[in-house]
Length: 444
Image (spheres, rainbow, N blue to C red):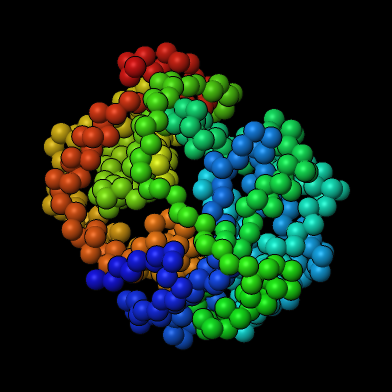
């Protein structure tokens, strides 16, 4: 079984993962970390530049800065205009994007392998040399406000954001990733610039590439890109420490929140604090979710949609971070059916906790997860993301065979015990739609 540790003080590492790919990792004297997975025969490559700062890390005066930077880094550097950046990727048929999370931010691209030097040069330039131009800053403020307005028009998005806040209360993980209208309007260009300077440094940077890549070439290209930007790579620095993977004691949040909207469907979420990302029971959680609400054969889907026709979309999920998490059941249904659907979701969850899962369900869930993972890692972007997650989260690389072994070790009793634990936790209910709080009286 391949489980490889990535110590922050180990400068060089190389090993062969399942499937015959080669994984290499270098920690440069400046603290920059470069990771690659070379996939034999691949003719494409995915590359990302990531920093371990997310929306949870924002402080007073800087709320919204992380999301602002995701937008602004595409708006021009000392060497390139926003149009130059767009043309660079279009000229090679590649794609580029960025994502802001609650605990890290990534800028990434997927290109033909021979275009990897261009991708590294452009993303490196963006990350290190953004102008944060005052005029572009104000233009982008309007764009972000439009993005938030678009999300606010999606009741399912509204429900999920409210659910995270209801479950996690005042904890920073309960804040929306993109900020709010108030925080985006309030944040200044100087505050975003301070956030940028404080968190986009050599010791913060993780570069990952996967596909048709050569590790030594990637290291050279990264170093050249950073040097061209004027970064001092000769100044020794230790890589930024990883977050402690320990569940925080987070006070219980709101029991009920109903957001009234004059829409045709009620969006209902019921759940509790879940398992943090590195909880040893995370493999049991994935199997529990697959059986309870993970697909067309799941209990929630079969009982609520197939047998009764009460909802189009119904599922369960767990969103885990370093020290906090939320677990939930979701359904979109007619407002008149809200109480019945909520009751059925909780009843199916309670049955799983009381009676456990069958051998057939356990086998089906494992086959579903194992097959899905094998298909997932046909993608160079998925392999790249795995490297980023390994480096930023806990420094342990599990290849496909090792991960499948962890899932196969989960027993039916492991799943039942986890369900019992979750069912006994403080419950929050969030709903968005043309409904009243009285729809949920019996569940409080």
